[in-house]
Length: 477
Image 1 (cartoon, helix red, strand yellow):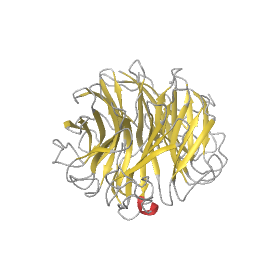
Image 2 (cartoon, helix red, strand yellow):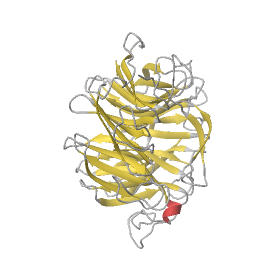
Image 3 (tube, rainbow, N blue to C red):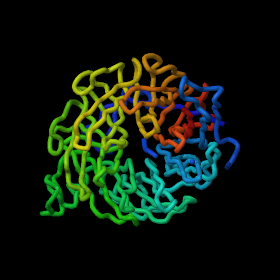
């Protein structure tokens, strides 16, 4: 049985190489996406008698994995009331029975509503593969997303280093089809939606310097003509979106950004069937017209054909990164991430880094912004709608301000926010080491489901199998 911990890290993004994007110099904790028994060592269960706040109660917290490094990055509620998680695994033991080498593979786990594992499957090849997102599809199956260096096993193509990879699965996790997209550099996919026409849209980033300008369907900056096979060669990395049909065939692809690092982490479909991609930008040229500082939240709004309608930078003079987005009932968007800025669009920095939420209208107008946390490092990696507002998941190193507890290093931090952006409730969970929340979903009853990973060996959440374990947490309000 295990317990789970996780770190959030203060970082700068290297301007030099797409495949060495992050220079970690300080670690702290953090946790996206909206919305159900292989052995007895699935994980420790934290009951409502063990962990609760005034308004949030942890029903269980299960650590799942093997003896190496395992993580969950995304979770969805399934039609049978259970849960489906995607991440990646290095393990060849524990609940992971189909991986024969200690090389990272995409890792899919399906559980019952009580967290009991029903089945575990891995996907990949002989080289490193990472899982980033999962969705349920209209046919009762799943689509999974990640990136891989492999061109064998479950993958049939690789164009150099990491390529984006999407796969369609049936309800039992069997592979139906798969597609790779990329060039010779590090091209990574982070988020996935099924569009209203039954197709798919993926977002991530393109190493445009390695692609030599390819990857934009030949469109120049106005994005409405195709005079050549290449677009404008911007710089290091770009937001990169792909529109696919229901069988994974490419309909169009677009990249957006400037001469520095620009990375997309999440996507939603807009009310008019267009697309909103969000992430962060270091640039102040080409598609970025009003940079606020070092790194900004960056939102890119497209029409249904991939034409740029507007873009918006948000933040202050320091590092601000948007990780997750959800739509609102009034046709707007809530973007969640973290900020280290005290000024600009940020009006109330509480600590070294705060959870930062912004609400944008469908025309890109800033409607409100709110900061949450304590005096240390706090970050949000995921957001989902709940009946009374929104739930966010991430990590925290704070033990003051709006954060009620810390068990050591970084802890999972889960909070509920009302429709106006006010904090309703919050709860932490962690052990003596690193505990991170990466993904979130909610049931129709408003129960909150959070996933991430832990490397803790003592405390309320721990791992005993070695390395890190994936974590599944169920919370009631």
